Image (tube, rainbow, N blue to C red; front, top):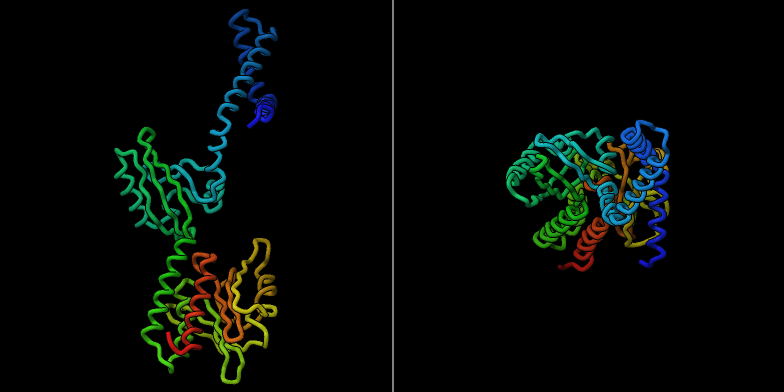
Length: 344
């Protein structure tokens, strides 16, 4: 950084101190005290001015020297994942920035409001291990209340008898872990159950695989013997695999609104914060049978459409990530490989 830029930064900090009302208050109080001590008279103006200027310069120099450190201290405010301090009972005694906004919105006051009891016990058992240690404990915990997986770090600060906690959302990584496991299970199923007469059974396995992946509902359409594309909506209801009545698709259309001419491509959409559910349905959902069959509010989906198959998956528990596009594509490719080639 050149000298001119450094001077400009110093001048900017100086201006901020000059308009800070607390500095004027400090100057007035200090001036009064000095005048009273020296002459029992508070009308001398020099102590006020000198004290004010010295304090402003001191503050400016101090902030300039620590400008990067002070900038670093702003990170917890900017961090989207929770960063906070708890006491020995689990009560949240300090938070800031996005964390404080989230906690106020969700009315979170203790870690019992974030994690289940078994996870809270785990956290305190780890904290107990840190009683006489300067190390950090970390572990993965799912927050049912926030509907996210977190990598949680805890560090005991013995001098103040508090615990620092900072968390990182790992939904994307967990989603990828589940996807890899599901692909492996599906490939094993195909390998163990394949023969020429079972191609349809392998294709029909796809909705179940996707529901196990964490989607709340799945629509899959395939071509019948007349070349007409149509299928069913599948969902889990009271631990039962339920499907809708048959839903045919108009030529060139998917279950989503609009013409689906892009082949072998996966795309996703989410309802924006300012978009009503009715507008979301009008803009995105093509077939009214979907909304009549589902008993959930649709807020996200991911879809695949080609000449031979059309799939739409709704509301994934952990949210949608790029790995979900890759997963859906891979599952369809495995099924197509078996169906079209007749061997693995």
